[in-house]
Structures are given as C-alpha cells and as structure tokens.
Length: 246
Image 1 (cartoon, one colour):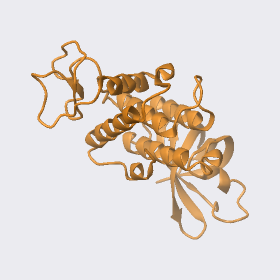
Image 2 (tube, helix red, strand yellow):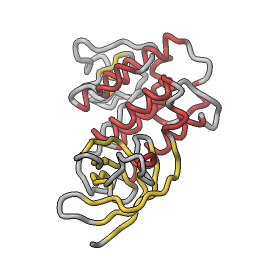
Image 3 (cartoon, helix red, strand yellow):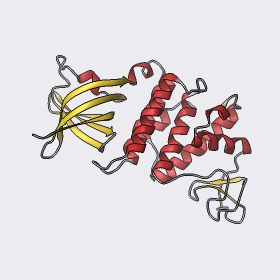
Image 4 (cartoon, helix red, strand yellow):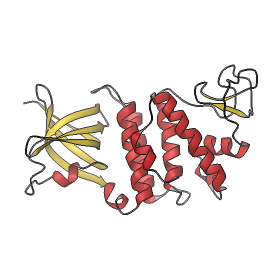
C-alpha cells in the first residue's frame, strides 16, 4: 500500500474492536486525518502511549480503502504529561482540542494555520509565554479568539463590526462580530468595560506584555464574552468548556 508521513496532534480517540483505535489527528500537511491504529490497546503495543490526546507526533500512514492505517509513530512533544497534574491547564487543553476538531471540518483539507496555532497554544500551556507565565484560562481565551479569526470569524474590539465607524465603542454583540456603535447596537448587547475590550484585543493579537497585573473582574468578563462569541459562531457550545476554571 502507498505510504506517506506527516506531523500531527492527536485530537481524540475511539475504540475499535478488541485492541484497535480510530485516532483523529490534526496534521500539518493534510489537515484532519482519521486513521486506524492497530493493536494500540494491548499492553505490548510499542506506540500506544504516543497516540493519546495532546500527543504531538511524527507519523507514517499506509493508505487504506476507507481509513488509513498508522504504521509508525515518533514522539515530538508529550504535551499531555505536564497537563494531567494541572487541572486548569488540562481542562483548557481539552477545550483547545475540541475547538480544533470543530473548526477543521473537512478531512484531507490543509489547515496549516490551525495546526500551528494549536501546537503553539499547547506549548504555551506547558512552558508559559515569552513574557512569563499566564493563567491557563487566559491562554485559552487567546487561543479561542485566534483560532476563530483563522477560521474567518475574527472579532473586532475597536471599530464597529457593522458599519466600520472608528471606535472605541461600548457595546459588544457576538452576532454582530464584536463591538458596535450605538446606531448599530442590537438589543441585548453587552456593555463591557474599556479594560476588558483592551484585554480581548491583546489576547487576539498575542500581545502578552499587555496582559500583566489584571483585575480578576476584567479577566472574568473577558472570558464570558469569549465563550459567548465561540458559542455563537460554532452554533453550539463546547462541551469541555464547562469544566474550565474561570
């Protein structure tokens, strides 16, 4: 059978038969891949531990009629090992995996930006930012906003999302696409603080130096708006998000 190699992150697994698993990957070159890993549930498996969620691996696949088959696995980063001892980081990572799975819908369609963003976010959860450690929920909010932006749902936190009039503005509507001016403001729009909107803009752009010494009320409000924005554009909430400590 023809073979190919790719780098990937394990998003989720499902049991198949008595000893096999179906693994869903987000890969660098081919986007989402679903493949069979034979015998990985046996204790004698050589690479079963490398095919758990959060694993960043280099793989060889054999092309199959319906599902490809994993034939070789080399570990690149074991992102999951440090996370299992840190509940906030672990639950944030679970949301990242679910988000990537939901946003990359088509299999075998390249999604390099989503792949690189996921690998980078999991690395930050493990090591912290270049500007020092940050709470896991803050790293998660940054990932959620940036992954939605890559998928074409970039929010605006300065100019009006509807008419484009220059901000700052004081109303926020997930359905409108971010902040809105008073004439464009839908009923029920939120009224976040200016500090919250500044934080959201910094998280979207990855300006970690602007996320130091935050008031807990600001981070909580930013997380709530991020969750609302994600739920609106994914049409239903992320199941794993309810377990994240805010």
